[in-house]
Length: 117
Image (cartoon, rainbow, N blue to C red; front, side):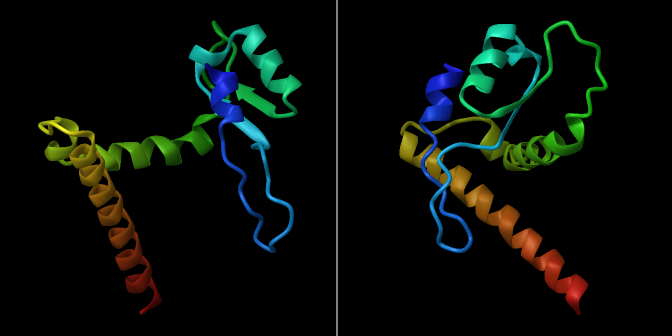
């Protein structure tokens, strides 16, 4: 499923309006993606794989950048209302997660404005 997922990434426009990027430069993942054939497929797509090989010891250094993603996911799931899905429709579930993302952004902006004062 990794190949179709990467190919489904929409084009991302550059900051200066140039040709949009169609694929990421680097792909990070944990040991669940560390099969040699997956690493080879990622390389064949022209993407640098930062995938820890299965069975490799810890300490690969991926945590230095992956921490940002893991931390943000924990922020989204921190309110109990977002952890347990009581909703009957996907639209409500999506709305609560978008609300959580807005709270995270507002807290970040509040922190920035306090630092600038």
